[in-house]
Image (cartoon, one colour):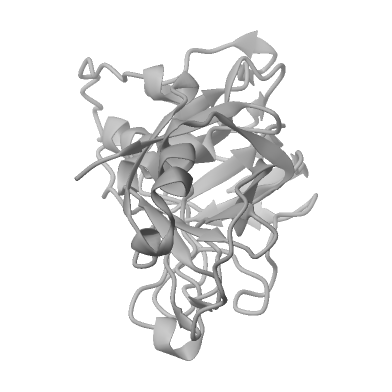
Length: 282
């Protein structure tokens, strides 16, 4: 098993989240950066949606009590195994008693730890993703223990060379499509929205990213309507709110843009004061 010695800033168990429950107000949840989580699992031959640990900004300190293979992808948080630096984006053998820790954040904002066969925990509504009010806890705490499969002694890993393009970690371009209320904006507002550089506010988390800059508008609230991860809402005060994986399922603000799936991964690796621009895809 894995024992949490120090949970880091915000460490959770995530898979691809919950589908088919949104009509009941249940968020999708799931990994913020699907690209990185999928890659970490692919290195080990896991299913793409196998449960992983998602760590935000400051990594956890973890004790392994039995051998396995692991892989880390996404943000580079300077991982160390038994205080020796290890490489991300490749399979690493772990023995009983080994301690995984993290140091300085070098690039990105969220990293993903996969183990052979995936993290084992209870499924609620078809998913292991942690979320307040649905799972027993919404974040890992010190001394928590996580199970994973025993390593088959006859298992012989084939370490294929897989290249991971991490350029997206520093890519400021966010690909978007027109939202349902985009055409309610004036031409000048549309131009400003798609040409201006925006910065991430301190209000950013798994539910939503709010931007610092204001887009003046006279739009009225809409009838409460469906929203999704990646929906960009515009408030009467001109604030832009980009909904993320743990967002609510309905909202009353105009939905002016919708992020592509890939761009949700890009945005999830951004933090306070970093810059982004919206790139409209027709």
